[in-house]
Image (spheres, one colour):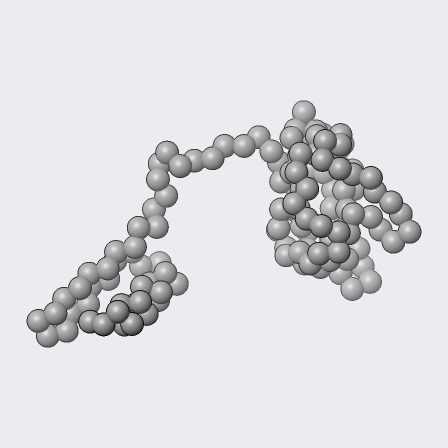
Length: 125
C-alpha cells in the first residue's frame, strides 16, 4: 500500500467513530488503530464558570449609546449584563450566571461569535 492511500484512510478514519480498521489485498494486510482515548491522568480541573454566547452574531461589550467598563478582575453579580450579541437589529444579553470575579475575557468587541462559545470566565464567590 502506498503512503498516499494510507494517508487518505487515516484521515477518513478520523472523521468516523472507528477505532480500528484492517485492510487486506492479496497477500498484503495492514491494520490501523487510532488512539483517541484520553489518558486517565490528563484531567483538567477548574473552578471558573464560562459565560457562553446565547446566539451566533457579533459580540459587543455594550448596547449602542451605552458604555461598559468591564475588565479582568471586575466584580460581577448574578444576572448582570456583561455584553450583548448583535443579531441583525436585535441584541441578546450575555449575563453572569453567578456572583464572582471576572477572571478571563476571551473575546474582543466587534468579533463574530458562535452559539455556545465561551466569551468570559467568572471565578464564583
